[in-house]
Length: 166
Image (cartoon, rainbow, N blue to C red; front, side, top):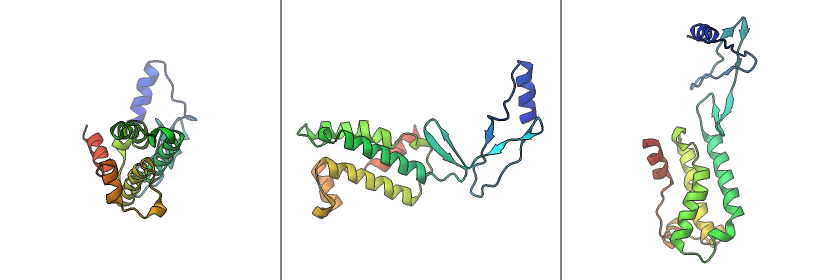
């Protein structure tokens, strides 16, 4: 297909820049692919940042998920005074889901979620609710009690499923 594409591009006066063109094979057993353009081999990548999401050649999303969670926690901490204020609980929950979860779940539609990733995401969700209610981990408050305090259920995995379905 590639030679056909290059021929079609040339018909319209366009050229493929071999130095800028990279390739990545996504597979459980990734191995380099040998593709030549104008007798020059294209560079194989192990990871690639696309639309602010990190894609890896093994298809595992753990690094991307952890990175997103770290960005969301940083955003939460910047606005901590707002999320822990005396504003109405419903409003604060909506703000967290709108502002913080949107950062954490950006690109979630494309994630391959393993059990370890699910645990990270669920822990992040509880982290948000506990911080919102000013519950320290040293307080030894069970997750169920914290969820009752914010009148919530564990929803982050359902939210990801909804996004994938759309």
